[in-house]
Image (cartoon, rainbow, N blue to C red; front, side, top):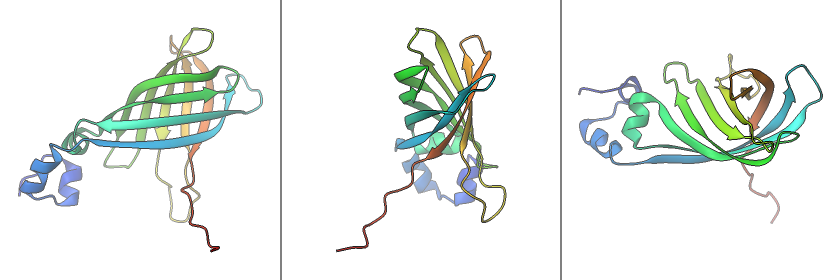
Length: 159
């Protein structure tokens, strides 16, 4: 069996499965929330990111790790609600996820959120947050954000 990506080889996909993965779009939604602080300090303010990531096909995702991303952002003190667009990249060898998102603040100025998530460094570690740097449209540092994925809903134990 010949494989066209490391992730695919790891999964051991046979030829027939590779043909199917080339035809299936991959898309998922995630809710992230946490705090951010402007460059130079200040107290942490709430930030919420609702993000949908999609790849043209499962094969594209396996081969390149690239996805397009879009959603909404609430960044207290900078933007009430803004649309974000950009890219998500999965590094299959390390498990790292990088985000590069663009948005416009309430004052009309462009900004970027750049950074990502890495798997826990050792077993039993707390869940790792997304760590993002806030940059102006010119690339100057404007702040930092730490966001966590929302906990999945749990089934109610009472009946």
